[in-house]
Length: 183
Image (cartoon, rainbow, N blue to C red; front, side):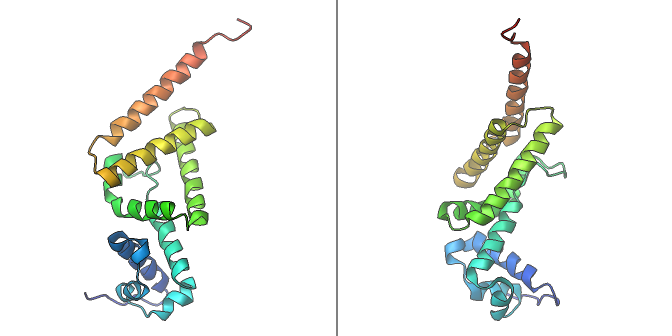
């Protein structure tokens, strides 16, 4: 494999990208620093310089991979199914990190970003952005992506998301119609 050498100042980006690619192919547990450096077109020592070692590099790769799965803020017009399919490798890296329980600090920040994304998405649709609705929305998206990653299921995630929105709107309308204790 011929790898071009990154330009000056781009070594850390090249290493992160290479780490994500290796992790997508082999998993986080089998990520080799030598292979990452080779694919990144840099020396092995540059990993220590930029990331302090393997854990720092893997944390950076996990963060970037997970941040690529912010589907609700995508403005390209791509369907949810397409976005998920385009990031299956990143999802595998993210879920491996979740299951290993070694990158909690990194993932906490990513999941906080998901919460902000969900609140914004709900507000755009005039839906409640309370904690329970946010958690339900996150569970729905995560369930859809896990089914797609693990089981390769081909159901329509966009239809599932729209059905969820319809249910939320129905519940919201019913809540407005229920008379209060003073009625």
